[in-house]
Image 1 (cartoon, rainbow, N blue to C red):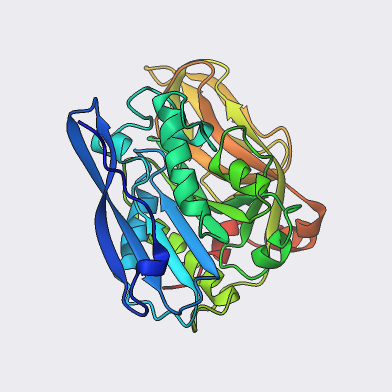
Image 2: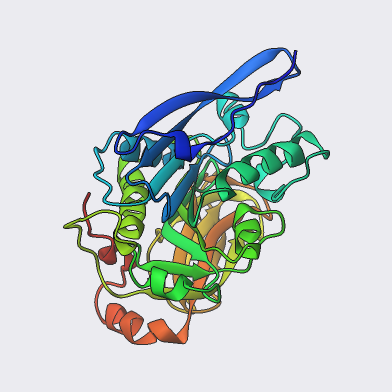
Length: 341
């Protein structure tokens, strides 16, 4: 059986009429056909600016898929350009409720891929060629893994051309200026000199409508920035720049009792959790080594030595004034997530 794979042809899409088509992806073992949806909205004859939204790059990260659904059903009125959405890029992982591809590769470590490489490399190459043929700006929607919750945040390289201006006009106040990961879609897009923003929010295998709406608002704010839509959406102008992140890990195993939550501004020496024996005796207290903000948190209360518990972000100098103001109050970065769809 020969796979008749889809080829993206935006120039053939009717102007002004959004479409959703189920298209052919590479088959399972050459036997089982695989189809996945793709959304294309071409507003004008001129295809550019073209924003490409990808979700479910890891098959268990379904908050991005939900955000894609809301965008596709949201009756957007594009004024110019094109919006392309692939709500389940890793359809294989999604069908199996797993992070990885059938060959156990992480798709987001396979880009830009190779036409004659492993299944993961071939699939990444196939997707990459389709979306980069048209895309000017890319948004990749992610979440934490199962049992790990991330506060809504974006990850990007602020040194990329045009990225700082873009970040200053988007709806998410928390910005992680992160290094590029080898084989990630973001790295491959960056190598082409085009901006790619990664959204992180929520946890794997669990839809959170509020988190999904943050993803929707992020895409809307990007469309608005490029003059592709008109919106009355408002959001806080402050941006909190995270220059470094670090996971705090369990020194010993036990039952985790959280004393803090995601979005909390924490100070050096502050107790954020406890580890206790089955009988309740205290094993150890988890104490902050530096000032920071809790970006992500483990939702599993049963931990082993070495398990990741809290993802801490260290704030850049650009944020100190705003953070100092917050610390005079209740120390909640989550107060800045108050926009609505």
